Image (cartoon, rainbow, N blue to C red; front, side):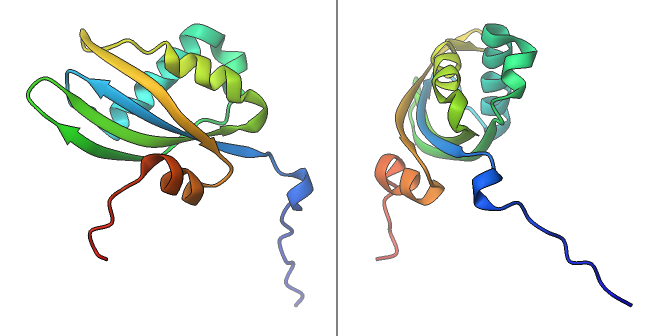
Length: 129
């Protein structure tokens, strides 16, 4: 019995991805699920369903950086289609509130890999060294 081997797409035919490192400062704590809903809602409201479907949005990782009584800071990485990078950045910059409290999202940088985005822009302190 011959087993058919699944063929994967060659790199030239795959969608090109970019990773957006972001920082969010809010008055209330944000979870990964909150970030997902905020990014999707902003994209859908600004660009509509057809355009947003081309973004291939994915929230890769979210880190809680600092929290105090009146300010919560998180950093994270969003994966998107390379051709839609400007549209995604525009959508996330329009996020201004969550549950009636102020939130601001801003882009720290763009990278071609998750590793580079984490190293260059998220800059987690490595406590194991």
